[in-house]
Length: 457
Image 1 (cartoon, rainbow, N blue to C red):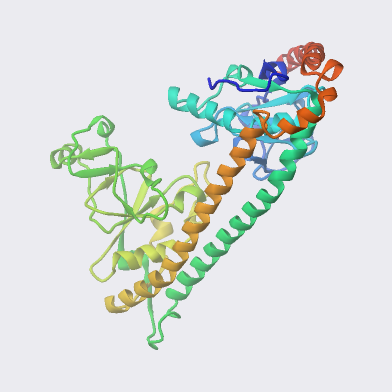
Image 2 (image 1 turned 180 degrees about the vertical axis):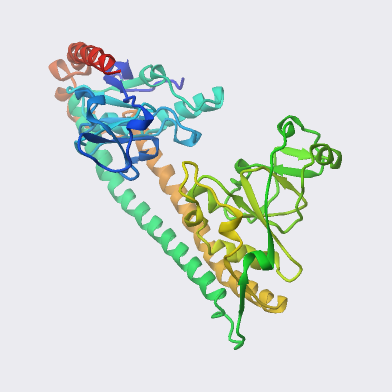
């Protein structure tokens, strides 16, 4: 654990001393609904927790499943404790107001004690010390789950209440302007996405070229060959380091705006492919996930060499009359998430892809279209790179400010000028005695609530 560096007037405690951690509710799958009905209450899940709480894609469960302490109150801090998406684990968000609902079993809620400034605690769980701790746990154990003790055993710094208030005021003043700047940068990013899509739309309706030609529209299945991957038994155990990559959905997470798939964890030989009866596809094939909804299916890449891919990926092989970059840019215009079926695990099928209208024009025209697109989007990419860099700098500045706050550096001068507010009855030592009494009272209420919850199972 990272060494705790605090002023001599502060006290070092554990997170468990500053409040209580309340686990989320359990419910049976058949009880859940996607819309409100009488007798149901909404619950938040892991996807609703990421810096700020969002209230989209809620699930509604029977009210009887929720005990009083599990209703979300203003200033409660929610954590993602378990998720299939590793990057979500450990994320926290603080409730800005009371919420007439609860949170699922893969989440937990930390409720600060009344004697502590709850915003001070909320900022602590956004600061570098906590983030580095979660990162270290993740790297060290390769987990997708946090245990209660992971949160509760973290070293926590306790200034006097008056200094906590001063720290929160300073942070809110400093971070307000930074947040506004970040919001403007994100708006600019969204505007560039709109511009990118507008360029692509114009490109594939012939508006970027003033050639007067009428574009022929054909079903994609007639212009190209739509294929699906497969995952033969034993392929995951082969690591012969051959020349033929075997791609999975996880390999689609390439950095930045990379177009081509170039790296895979599994690389097969010709003999491996023959032994497994694994079909390979040529360089230039456009690939994308076929399962997982809009977020996944809108990842698109081009095979950089002959490759194979698993059953969760789909591909479109261009014929001799279709250039790979023309096909790829046309795919960028599509929102494949809208083509997914309505099953529990949304997916795309051949029948969803093959009938799509595809503009089939001579290859020399395709080359001109590619040139027009790339000329415009190269400027767009430079702007996107600059925005990304500025966002990284803004986040780095935020973490620097938070680090100084929880090392007592933001209020160093304040302590010198207000010694009466950090000593005697106002001291951190005096506050520590008060929160111990509050903790025992709150823990007793939670024990009684747990007994009630067990009776509901």
